[in-house]
Amino acid sequence: MGTARVFDRFRRILKGLDLGGLARETGFQRRTPRKLTPRAFVWSMLLGAVHGPVRGVADFARAAASFGATGLTRQGFHQRLTTSAAQLLRAVADRLGAALTVLPAPALPGPLGAFADVTAVDSTLVGLVDRLARQFPACRTNSRAAVAKLHARVSLTRGQVEAL
Image 1 (cartoon, rainbow, N blue to C red):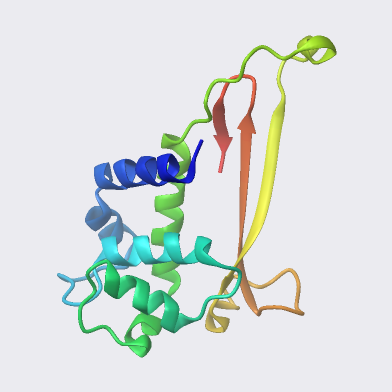
Image 2: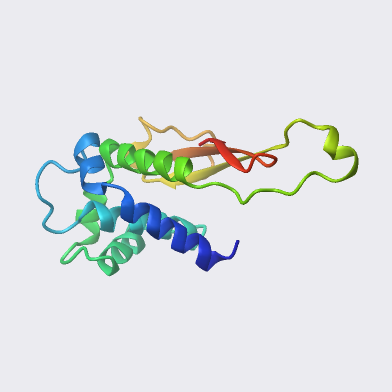
């Protein structure tokens, strides 16, 4: 699946999500946002995380500004990187994982056809700001103080995301 198709699926799924409701549920949004909307925050974090291996808070703040966060400073964005922001991103990731499915795989060829299921497992580390180290301690201390470890398990024979 090409990058454009994946982006289009993300856009359609996120458009159908009630990001404002999720933001209120997780405590990210307590009142009507004036500068940083849940939509701008989620898109800046999603697209900012896949942009490159090292991104700073200023880069994420600029990405949020391009998604409609007007008048937001780097410090203002940095102040929003709280536990409730992490909970919002987890809730969005859970819903994205439930909505995304892998294209159906053809029958497994040759000797692999004897297997009932073939599962692909992926884990990745996403660096967080250092002040979240107490809630999200890093498993490797030589790179960052705080990280979120994301896991995905996909059934290749059924074409379904089993866990995220």
